[in-house]
Length: 367
Image (cartoon, rainbow, N blue to C red):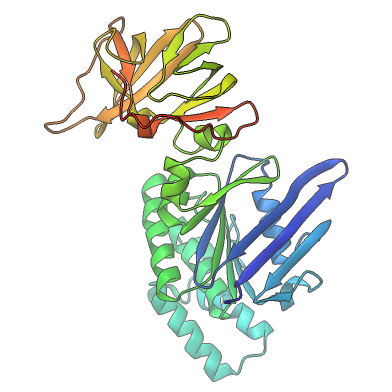
C-alpha cells in the first residue's frame, strides 16, 4: 500500500476553551494539490500553520511520508511556504531572495547559482534578477515568493492565501501559473483560501472546513454536485437553502407561508432542509413548477442571467441561466409571477442532523 505524502491524524488545536481545529484527519497523496476551503475562522489557516510547524498542535499527529514530524521545528520539515504577504526581504534582490533558503542550507555556490537561474527561468523572472521587491508589481512579487519556496526542492509546498493581494485579472493568471508549475513538477501542495472560484480552479480535492471541523473532502465536482450537508451546500456554489417540515413529496415552511412540491418522494418525515443550486433552477409559468413566486429582481451578468424570486414573505430564491446565445434565459421584470422547477437529480434533502435523506422514488422530474 502506498504511503500518503502527508497525513494529518486527528489533528487538533485548542486556544483556551476554543477548539480552533477539531480532530482533522486528511491523507494527501504525492503530487496532489489539496485546498483547505472555508469561511474566516473555520480553522484552515491554523491547520496550515500546524503543518508548517509554526503552531504546536494540542493533539494528533502530522506525518510526512509515514514519519511523524510533529516534534520537528519548521526549518527541519523541508517545506516551501508562500505567505499571503509574500514576506520578501526588501533589502535583497530578486535573485538573493530566491537564493535565501539555499544559502541557509549551505548549498555550494555553483549549485546554488544554477538552481536560482532555473527558478527564475521557470517563473519568468530572469529579467528582474537584480531588482528589489519594491520595484516589482504584485504579480512579480508573488512569483519571487513562489520561486524562493520551490528553490529548496521542498517535500511539501504550503500556500497561504497566495493570491489575495492581487487584482481579479492577475489572480486568474497567477492561479493558472501556480497550477502549471505544481503539475509539471508533481509538487505535493496544500493551499488555504476562502475564495471558491480559486479553489475550484486549482484543487485536485477540496477540504471544506467549518468551525474547526472537516465537513467534506472530495473533488470540486463532487463537493459542488453532491454536498455532504447544508453548510457545504450553501457555501459551495451558493445553493438555495430552505428549512421546513417534510411529508412525502412536500416541504412546508415552519411558518406555513409556502409549501414546496419536491421532485422526489421521501420516506422520512419531520424537520428537513432542501438545497438546490441556482444553476439547476429554471423559471416556468405559474402552477407548472414546484413552488410559485414573484420576480423581485433580474440581473444580467453577461454570460449569466440571475433572477431573485420571492416565494414567501421571508424567503427569496435565486435562479441562474445562460445570458447569451440561442439558449439565453428570458428576462422577467420585477412583479412577474413565475414558478420554480428543478430536476430530481439536482435536489438535495437533509434531515435535522444534517444527514442526506434518501429518496424512495427515481422519478426524473415533477411537473
